[in-house]
Image (cartoon, rainbow, N blue to C red; front, side, top):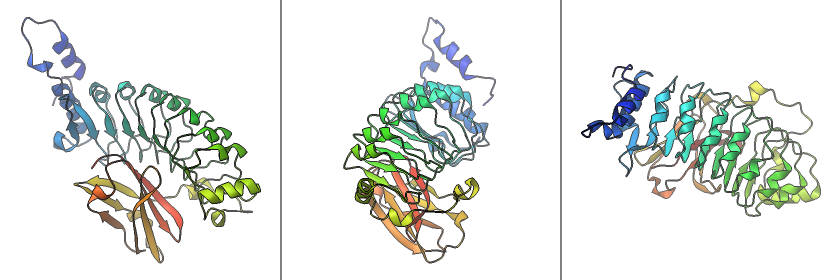
Length: 352
């Protein structure tokens, strides 16, 4: 497809006054043209559009899964696929996001995890209908405040980044049920976390947190809170009791009296990949080398409930789970552990 036959030109042609109807009024043509340009510019000129796109009841593309295609550039044409509800761009090589993406205000699921973004544009605040946002392993050191304009968010995945702080405005996401902040560089937890009334699961593990605010005990009593691998060595008796009720093994995993781990060693996780395909869940961790003893894989739902688990020999580098009806079609959180210690994690977007 010639790039000079642009989306803008096609739209202008379709919308121009005419005495007779034009076939290009069928906007599915605009969607497929945008996807073809995007694929071609990333070396996938022969990839069938049906392999990455799903057409909804409106007759427009409402889901686009471009994960794991080694994309290096997301072209602005993505903004013309205006009926998109789900956009999965995880595990690519993207280092920037075009501003046109932030105009897709019907999006409910956006997965940008596993890219090289380092920073997130403030335009994310325009996506007011987002329910799930994946930003894991993107190199983020700062989370823009505009994320907290996405008031419908239920799942926010920020694991494996370089965040040193999280905004006190986080609880303004009143519908948030699952918050993953594991494997960052957080040193403290905002006192406002106590205002999370509906939260089901908060993962604060593998950070540098050395204290907890007293008001955190006001959080939803039923919420699971993961505190392993931090520096929580001097909690008050009341906070210890609260922490014991959330995570029975937290105390034994704390690092006390040692130097703070350097960033390079702290963020040295090596690629647990997880994806759905043909009714199965596939996991792979080739970059881990031969681990001693056994490794444990856990598949959790957004509430933190373990849906499936398996212990494997340390030399094994992949695993698949067939019959996904057992774990449903919602978002999944996968953990790779050894001797009880979290080695790596991955988030799997909703779907079958």
